[in-house]
Amino acid sequence: MLQELKGRDFLSLKDFSKEEIKEMIDLAVELKGYHKQGVRKEMLAGKTLAMIFQKSSTRTRVSFEAGMYQLGGLAHFLSTQDLQIGRGEPISDTARVLSRYVDGILIRTFDQQEVEQLAQYADIPVINGLTDLYHPTQALADMLTIYEHKNQLEGIKLAYIGDGNNVVHSLMVAGAKLGMEVRVATPVGYEPQKEIVEMAQGFAQENGGKIILFNDPEAAIQGVDVLYTDVWASMGQEEETEIRKKHFQGYQINAKMLELADKKAIVMHCLPAHRGEEITHEVMEGPQSVIFDEAENRLHAHKAILAALL
Ligand code: CP
Ligand code: NVA
Image (cartoon, rainbow, N blue to C red):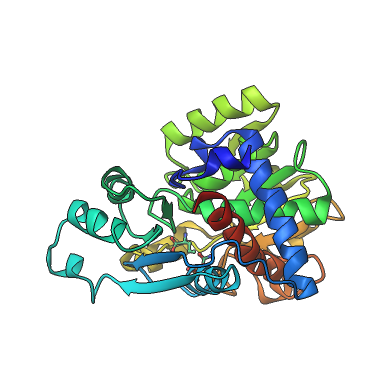
C-alpha cells in the first residue's frame, strides 16, 4: 500500500483515501519510535528536497529541513525573495528546472492554484506547505496527535473555534475521511468555504463522520474530545487584524469555554498563537493543552510524508 504513495503529490488530503492517510499516520508513529530510540533510518539517503517559501514559517520549515536530514537526505530553503520567481520567472519553468535537480518540492504560498501549477509541471512530488486554502501537512500531524492522546480517530468529536481558514479546511477533510465529528464555530461571515464544507460532508458520509457548522461557540464545544483554534487573522490578512478582533469577540478558548468540553478534552493550536486573543495563556499552558506535542508531531508526520512520497 505504501508503495502506491511513491511519486504522488501532497496538495490536499482530499486526494488520499482513508487507508492511505492511516498508513501515513502509522509510518509517522514508527518513525517517531525510531527517533526516540536514537535509531537512524536513512530511507532518503542521497535525496534532496527544494523548499520554496513565500510566507514566514518556523515549524514547517525547520521540521521538513530536520526531517530530510534525519532520513539521510538534504533540504534547500528557498525564499521567493531570492529565487527568480520573485523577479517574474514563471512557476511552470521553475517546476521543470527544479525537477532536474531534486527529488521533491515543498511550497508555501498564497494561491492554491500556484501549488497545483507547480505540481502539473514538475515530474517529482510536490508538497503543499500551506496555502490560503489548505494546510494538509498540519492536519496529518494533528491526526497523529489526536490518535496518540485518544487512541482512536473514528468517533472523536472535535470543535474548531475561530476563523474558517486553511487550517480548518484541512481539518475538516482529514477528520471527515477518518470518521470524526468535526464541529466548526465561526462568527457570521467567517465560515469555511462552502465547496469545501460540502466536499468534507461527502467524505464524512462515506466514512461515518460528521461536519457541522455553528455560529455559537458554546453550542459547538459541548462534550467534545478535542478543542482546536487558530489565529483570527492569517498571513496575508494583516490589514484586517483590528476589525477581526472585534468580530471574533466570544470566540476565545478560555477556562470557561474549556469547562463545556469533555473533562478529558485536549486543547490544540497549530501555532503561532496570539495569547489573549484566540486562546488564553492559562489554557495554552494548562494541563489539557497538547499544543507542543502537536508542534513536535509536525516533524514525525513530515518524515512519514517524505518517506512515503519521495
Ligand atoms: N503551524 C505552522 O505551520 O507553523 P509555521 O508557520 O511556523 O510553519
Ligand atoms: N491560518 C494560519 C496558519 C499558520 C500556520 C495562517 O495561514 O497564517
